[in-house]
Structure formats: C-alpha cells, structure tokens
Figure 1 (cartoon, rainbow, N blue to C red):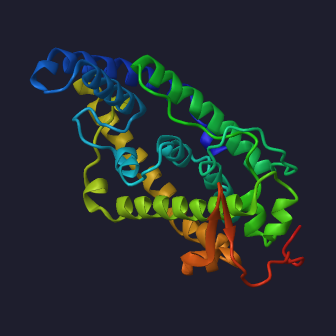
Figure 2 (figure 1 turned 120 degrees about the vertical axis):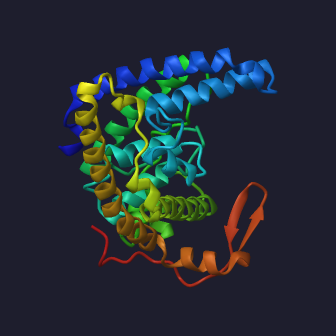
Figure 3 (figure 1 turned 180 degrees about the vertical axis):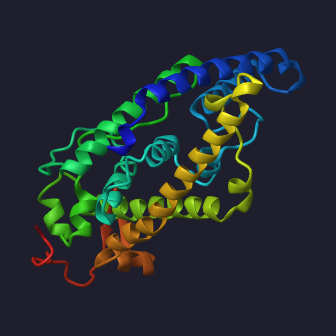
Length: 299
C-alpha cells in the first residue's frame, strides 16, 4: 500500500534526522547558559527539541514544518502519534466511521482491563499495526532524548465509535464492552472534540499560504553539497505536494467522521449540557428520547 512504499528511503532519512538533531542539540547545550532555566528544565527542553527535530517537526532553519504546524493546533498528549498516522497515509483508505473509530482510541486512557466483545475489522487492524510501529519509533527517539514517552492507546478499547456511527444504541454498546453508560457518553463526546480539533488544525495549515509558498527544510532532507541542492529542493517540493494532497483529502472526511457520531443522545448531550449529572464517580444521563438500535444500519 502507499504508506508502505519507500521504506528504505525513509529509514535513511531517519538516520540523517537523528544525526542532524544530535548536532543541533550539542550546539544548544553549548549555549544553554544564556537561558534562565534550571538544569532539569533545560535538559527537558533540549530533549523535546531533539525529538521534534528528529521526527521532522522543526526544520533545520529552526522553523516549524508542516507537521510542526499541525501539532501546534492539536492539544492532545498523543498528538504526535495522530499526526504521524496522517502524514504516513495510514488513514487514507478509511471511511468516516473508521476515522472516528481511530480517533476514539486516543480518548480512552484507563489502563484497566476491559471485557470487549468487539472484533476489529481489517482497516482497523491495519491502522493499529501501523500505530504500533509509529509508537515504537517515537518512543525510541524519546528514550534517547530522555523525556517522557508520548502516551499510546489502550489495546482493549475499540469498537465503540464505529458501532455508534453505524447506528448501534447505547444499550447495544453496553452489551459489547464493560463500560458504564456515562463513560460511553463521555468517550463519544471526547472523540467528537478530538476530531474537530484535528479538523481545525488541518484547516488552519491548509489555509495558511506561507506554509505552502516556502516550506521549511527538515533534517531528513538536508543538503549535503551544492551538486545535490537542486535535487533536494525538488524532493522537498514533491513531498510538500504529497502532504497537501493527503491532508486535503482528510479535511472533509474529518467533518463526516464527527457528523457520524452526532446523533441520538449524543447530540442532545452537546446541546443540553445539564442533561447529565454526576453521582459518585459515574456520569448518569437524565431522561432523553428513547435510545434503540437502528436495525437498518447495523451489519
């Protein structure tokens, strides 16, 4: 598939990225005395910059790349993983409901074991495999940078958003996964919020003319000689076009993904915030319209 092409080329670029980021980090450490930070704070800042450079979020000219601009608009601890999925093309072949499903994985952060009767479909399995590889790569860089790991997903949590987007009721979801009704409402709402956040970040980057008029060169694309300068410049332009086409295709799909979850009690809970109350640790919805499975949409 498209996101699996040019693996060797990507690995070579990653190696160059690590080398370039290491050199930048050493320069940064030599000048750290100019910054009023504690030693621990300076080390954390150094490590974060190193990781972002290596992953291609900060260019060799110290400006944000396309990935960096996207990350700036996503306020989620796993934002890097989401952007890597986007830019590697792992989300290209998903339906709106499947895209909502992937985003929902990042909305659940309880490590307890879940009893889940859902079975991942082929596309979800593929994306999970790619996400696992991305997570290992990102964590490897973060370990080298001596910074906290980007949080991953909970393996047992899946199937909620996809089933809901296809018309399953809350009662149906409760029979498939070991979560309370209030938890499901909260997770679906948080998934919509995350999708809309990613949609906003994508829109801001697409609409920013300066992003596409002059791309920041990243360390994975460094020019090594005058002879190769033209080839690298051409490569940057081609990569930029691919990135733009990819996120342009994703933009309307994100809107459709959010819309696929906005029905029934969820849309009511977003328009009438007071319809749910908290009893102890559980969020309990107040009476709303009857929530029943739509048998015509369930497969």
